[in-house]
Length: 213
Image (cartoon, rainbow, N blue to C red; front, side, top):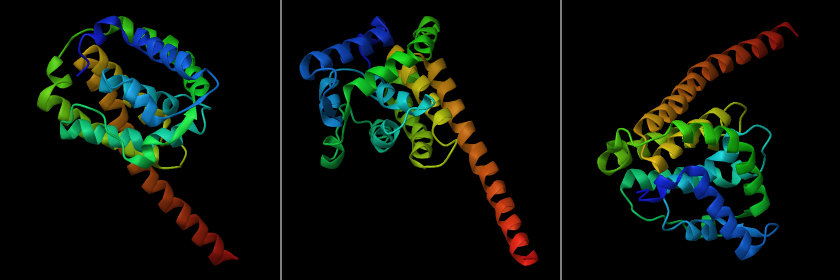
């Protein structure tokens, strides 16, 4: 689904997208998710997913992760369904954010994006097309769902995993796709297991405090 754009590199694509948005709307303007997806309609699903995932994996970035988390889940569902073009329901289509916030997030992520782009290349291409892509989309729904949970530790690492997988989609690199999936899924599994144990411990602690009061 990435077509020839992936050859140009991920950072070049992001620069093009931001430049187009800034020229059309102005750097301090607000745009909707619908305007973003419309601008990217001819681009890779991976670019759209990456732009939305980046704010979720960087520390101390607020507001934007809450705006994009559900659309990310919706996008990965569409990948799993085999849909070739992006569609958003009306309420998500109208959801807005500042272009400058998105540009700042991309700027902060640029150093590690360059590192991944340097090692990326067409490998295991079956994971970025056909049934392989649909399976990847289904698995990516899990870390995206984790990002929706408004609790500590539920968004940064899953967001990183989704971002790496998205770079893999853009570059048609199945190795990066697998790496992103492993990071996201292992972290969510660890949270599910460790979070349950922590919750049990806190309940027991609270019960003990009440009993001794």
